[in-house]
Length: 419
Image (cartoon, rainbow, N blue to C red; front, side):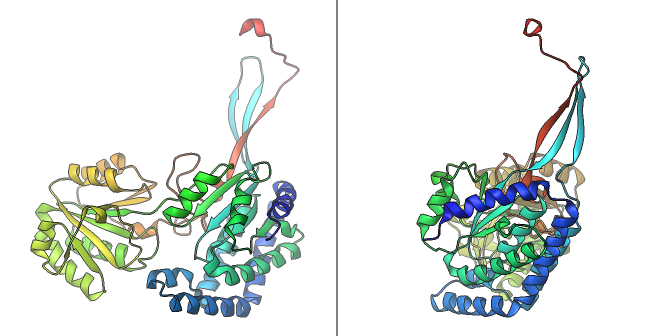
């Protein structure tokens, strides 16, 4: 088994170098990482072909294979994301005024790195580069542990990234990679609370629960993405069709894809039959409530379990609701807080939905598929936090830092008699 503790010690030492590294040096490292990844494209893609073929042979779903697959276009997007991160403002060292106390002390806040961040993820090899790049720019060292299904691809990516970091004069320990598929390696990593400052699990509910249960390190979790689109009674039909189709079909195997469509009863007969035909043409299996099935006879009957299902596939639950109150209550009961959307021409309804729905991203007249660090201008993301401490929604550079207080005095001492 790999020496995980040594990996973490190397990362801790590297984090101290990164914390004081100037922005231009970090940006140079990010560009070198992109260059090294392009140079290693043949090795990365060859490893990925082997793993994709193995996943298909094992009977993995099409959505899973899609998440696992890298091609030249996707790999180039990963490289461009690293370069985009290099172009973003550096949060480290940013100052904000806080207060000037009556005794003359001046207090400010400064953004600082978190330290060493362990990222435990499944299936998506591009996470290796996205996480490493965001950590480096925000002054953090990264320890990466991907799933066994992509271990060869991830190893090649990590190797290239470390080459780029070293070429820029920064310690290669800034990106550690756990190339051991044994779960004991993860357990060991989760116990290193004196070396690792934060753990981010990025994968299915089982992974998230396991990390929360076993970790002695603080956890920033990305829960499952049970996203809804609610079509209000005064929605524009063409817009509603376009958004509802995109949110489900564009890439169904990702966490920001819609899993449940809610439709107001006053618009259901105008929207659902045509939309259902488009879903059928796209290969989507519909599971509907009784009123939905009356309008769409080929839909299967939805069960209570369907309202809590993250399919990550071409399956969609559909429910007709009597009011926005019912839609919001359904989302509150079944949503996971990742992303929710309303399609409406009623400004008051839109404002109420955004105010009352509890999620990391709440949309009006747009697809939930935009819930992504790249789409939000973050360059990339570490995942989408569904919790509320310390970050929520897409996790980018700012969310990978915290603040410390800077207090400047002129010789003040505290008199405890004054409280």
